Image (cartoon, rainbow, N blue to C red; front, side, top):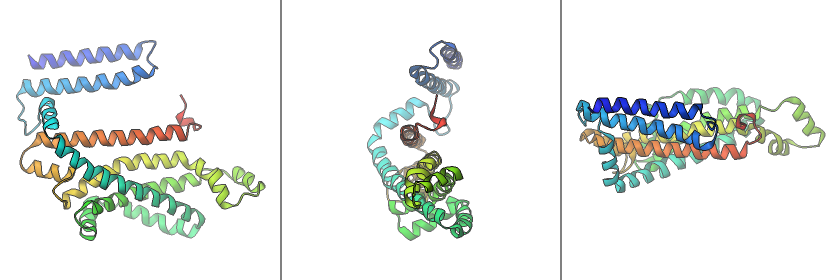
Length: 280
């Protein structure tokens, strides 16, 4: 019965989304929001029905209702973990790493020697596995959030650096020559022309870094952490087979990561409204 209900839910959700996609209002903001919301609800309801209908062991895959119940009952722990991992570790490392990358990109832009020397080193370091770097940084900076922020800095620095350097090269020679005819020096040209032109590239780096920051902070907590944090809680609850709490932590991480990405994308839309990618 539950399996049949899951099939009905899937067909119903599919029909509603097809109807909305083909309606004359399919380009409105409300429909654009409704389609993914309906799809998400359909998947959650199917998940609930299939888990209960097939009698899946909660250790393998708990039902959404069990996850929601654990989410509510453990909201205090989830909030403490969120503050430790996201606010202290991921966000601080993100701000430090991205700010440092932009500053270094400007220095590299001034020096062809650094372009040829530092960028290959950066690509090499960016390729290092996080599971190898995290224990080293935990030993250097301690078991609190400082070491997690250091891991995040390493993860976001070079993607942001490469995007910013590429963005600073986006202007053509005619635009730079025009600035010189206005007697604009390097710094004025940078502020008035090159940084604005680099914004789409920089926001690409910032959006990539949002996901890397949270992943880095969570993974770093597997290698040493005080008795709080998303990574600490996930590793602890897996050992105790408390998979409902693990999924609750995953839900918090997904919500925080999506909101973080959405905020950066919203700022990008306001700052780079002139760029072709933001039209339509």
